[in-house]
Length: 329
Image (cartoon, rainbow, N blue to C red):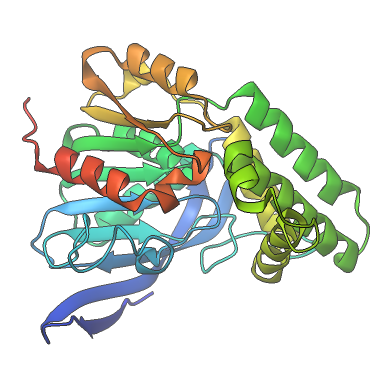
């Protein structure tokens, strides 16, 4: 499908190139062995065509519009500035946006994080990217980024992994399994939506920390405090995300596995000290398995796993430092 092209004006009146489109992949082989007759991958390419390319990937609810969900890091004057770098992203296969995914009531095959990387590689080839300066991935996007680093091999300069490791933690796997069980047990569209809202509420509790919730809501009544906050999170998510897409991408997170030895580029792993989903010791183990290619950066935050969306200055400092370093062969 032909790309859609527009130019966005920045605050100085200059134009920032933004190109977006949908690539249809034919006979697309999945890691499970299933082959999709066709699969649409929606992509966005933001910044000068001749600038260094950075692939930017977020969590399961993030999409190709990185200027929306990660505006603190992606934009004019930010660590990932589209005037200086060419920022490429996609909507997830199996997700809730423009890429192919499960329709309500229809079967859709399991999607592995390797499949997302395979689709991304096809997009990069489609838009004429010969070399990628860096992959910056957070949460699920950092899982996908690991496999894309393997597939790009010598075409990649460096990898940044935020809030992820080479495998799922047992605690996160158990938590997500319980979230999916509630949706799978529900009957009827309305009940499944209610179950999805509850699953999101459970997920948000995993993304944050007891310390943050005590500091924010400790003196408030339940309805006006933590329960009202959770209810709003669940309702917003259920309005925009189909239960089938949540089931698909949640299971994909659980299945993620990448051999650290297969990643051959300098890799910075960003661990959050109170992350319940990816405990610091798991991130440390990932770095140790990477050997001389791995570097550990730590962020102290009461926000836990969501620190990549909340600790703007700390994350920006890490990204700026990593991207300014020269890559040695």
